[in-house]
Image (cartoon, rainbow, N blue to C red):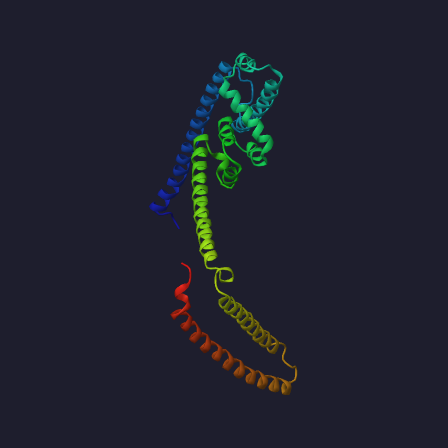
Length: 292
């Protein structure tokens, strides 16, 4: 059978479309290669200008940056240690002059020494020092207490924070800490106040003998009532233990449980009724004298 005109046109169009896509891909590849070559040329020029002789691979450069970021923190610590020792070795008033000769300001020297001294004492700071990526972030860490450092360490993005972001996060943690301490202070104050009021109403010391006897009786009744309620619970738990294996034994066991259930229900209802009356009497009388 002969080809139709449409079939012939479709077969002719397919190679043409494929050829067009290939040309676009080749053009994009050439453009990318040109761009990369241009970037590489510019990088080489900058490297020569600044005396850089290392790798020009992006991955290798990032690894080296991380290495020197860690070395920056290490340099601060090691400089601070040596400044601390130097201060002890120099006569009074001479240390500042020697710091100036080293090209350091007094403030910078003090911060480096503070960093070294605090890192030696704080395990938290020593751990965080190995995670931060810049000297400025590390020096910001040094200014905070261990409880704030604990909170910072728990943050997921801690290792990516700048010094300003770290400072802001630390302020938030300090605000939370202050609010918690304020609540605890208020709570303790309330407890102390209640304790003082309770002391003023200490029946064993301040009230007549007949009231002391009544208080002792009430305390004894409370202990007896609680002991009997506990005994009821133990009886119930014992009764609800393992059932007999045989069918006849199970029937007898279940009948006994039914009888016990009736007795215990009646006892609890009677206790509940009497307790309700006693509570109402108490509410109408003695409760009016409870300390505020």
